[in-house]
Length: 51
Image (cartoon, rainbow, N blue to C red; front, side):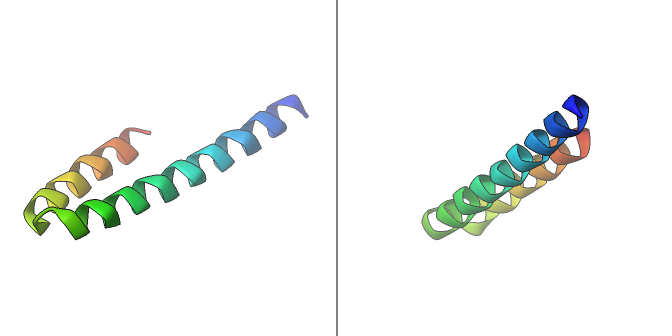
């Protein structure tokens, strides 16, 4: 039960993190040119693959 609970907290935290990152990317996309954002997206994809 403890393991399942910690996994649920972990998954919830990851989904919140993904939402925050997505909002940040939209914010950056509104400010910076799209070239920088695409490079950031590639970096985030690499990070997510490592996770």
